[in-house]
Picture 1: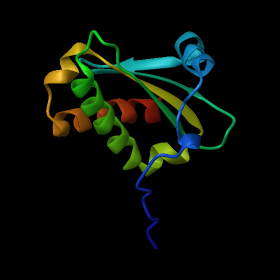
Picture 2: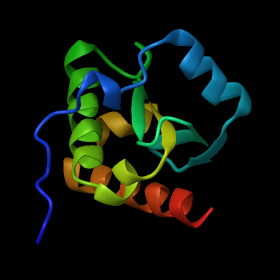
Picture 3: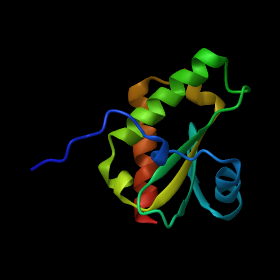
Length: 118
């Protein structure tokens, strides 16, 4: 029997506090490509949490929100990441503003596979 995919990320699924983001940047590992940086580390919560960081240098609010929607959709659709006990902060780079969602999914998938392997 296949498990149902949740349609939204709950508060428990998100990094929300500044100290959580700072801890990831200081103590976590990272993988990156041309479009994104994924900083990650294990947690003791028992499920994955995601944070998204996009600065104003990347683009205006419309562009930043589009990237956030794409990133949330990718992680919502990845059961292997949600089952791991890991915190992930996705940092978008400036070139991410010019890619289509399919290319963004491919990029995030490659980075997520690198996290799973390492």
